[in-house]
Image 1 (cartoon, each protein chain N blue to C red):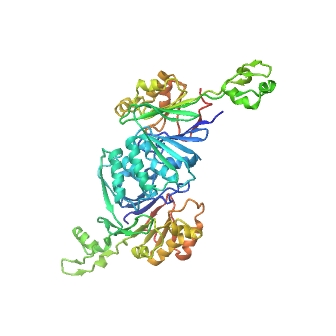
Image 2 (cartoon, rainbow over the protein chains, first blue to last red; image 1 turned 120 degrees about the vertical axis):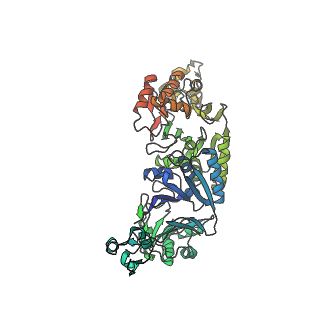
Image 3 (cartoon, rainbow over the protein chains, first blue to last red; image 1 turned 30 degrees about the vertical axis):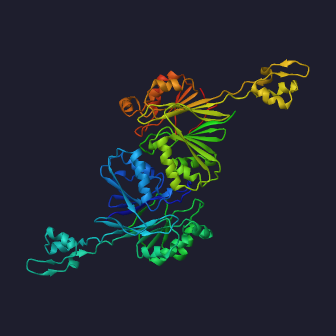
Length: 308
Length: 308
């Protein structure tokens, strides 16, 4: 099974507390590390979680609030102190690209890696694509321009059935064609259907990150049918008004989006520092969408296995 | 005794590790909190150490390397979320003032407190002065312009001897004059010398912060005679060459400065992340200057009491 792990480094909101760290996640896609948001202290958490900075290739910043990006200067500087020889791309709104580029050019001029800023806008677009995964932005509804990120694994290859391939003397050079779904024709002209020689490919998993945003049905449209949805749940029911005012969501809002989108599993996060006990938020969400879990700092979620 | 406490929030060097945090100290001067350097993660340490952000009035940044100032954006933003209604002054080199001002104007435009940037240069000058304390800069010798900070308590008032003042019927209104050292004249014209009515004032304590710098005898001249000296000790003897090359000091260099300056007590810090055991650094320093101690994250040093 190809590795697809979601590491929760921080799932608190803006006001710092000893309960949570500011927003940061690291998606491990077959040992290619892709970061989503980068709150202050992220580099130390990478260190604590033994996530290798040298494997970090892309950083996706959802919006320009400090609790989602103030870890960038430290992290990008430290990349120059570790064995990092390739490039890092920061996908970020224009004002952020400008400010952090200037900052890095001042504080970390002699970088040993290439630092690329890719400017994102509110307009949804493909921001990353390789053989394993694609990343698209989708619009969020916050006080400042904000986007979510939708990670989709590419369709995977079928698995060889070694007993069957041996039985039919399939030559090694044909295995790749088998994995891609082609039938095999023996020397005597017999057609062996692919399904007799292979087993189904692993499902291609999808993961959407939606933080920060107020409730909006268009978010549900954008993430329709994904396997996993991380949706901010800054507040509980009792603070629904604060949520609206500040363009944030309640746990119930998050669950509503998950239900409308028909996702398989919802992860809550971006909790206000006021909550010492998060179980009411979980309960409120599960009333609407049972397949909900709370994100916690330290979580490493295997996205290929844990879909309910 | 008037409170003068030095809190060590971080005493590591640039490369992050799980052993240390980047440079930050908070000097508590009678509950007025003055910060020296502000590495990433400082605001969380303030929280952890229960140092009230609302009492923070001045931040002194020694030089523009990330491990000494990347905590500023987060800290200054969070000040707007706490009960902070007065002002905060950041004493910093010009390029830093410019960059962090811009950053704050973008990320934290609607501040509920006044944010003042006071531009420092390499030229030594008085940067702060009140009834309790003064702060002067002095030059350091690093790869980029850098200064140290010298905190000097003002001479303190003498203590009233209650038995003596009662015996001579000294009226309350004269107590302040007594504390300032004046003699008392009774109604019948007898002069009671001040020393019979009071006891000595507490000593005015001085503290100097010198990080980052290579060894330079001028640093010793600048801090001559201070009670406490914090001096960077990035390396041990075995890395003396690295220290020179990178404009840092060894523990022995720090001790040499302490000895030449005739300070009372030396505190070592700014350790390279390579040292899991700091005792060799302490030993090497103590060979030159016995009254040396290691700074550790979590230290709260009572500067009025612990002078050897």
